[in-house]
Length: 88
Image 1 (cartoon, rainbow, N blue to C red):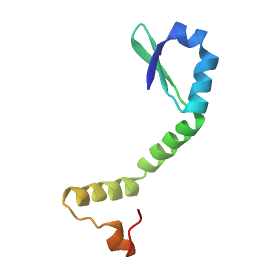
Image 2: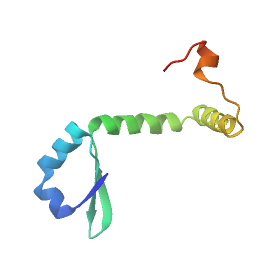
Image 3: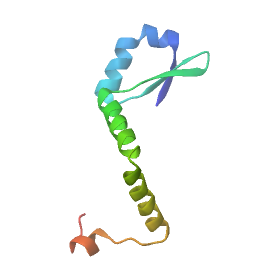
Image 4: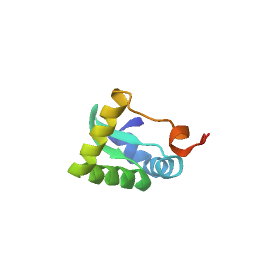
């Protein structure tokens, strides 16, 4: 993630948009050192939006927390144990 000032963003907007869409770069645009906006690809934005929607579902959050608790307590299985073969 790169940072750029408002003037730089204004002067190099086309290049920043290209780097965002073609190379997946994300930019934080600031004004006098204060973050004001984020420039990211549409694909990244849609993924973020989908994640936020999923995380707003109480059941999904509950399942995620249960999974994290299982990992902390060592209640995990390898892919080989689950599928009977290594996936790598």
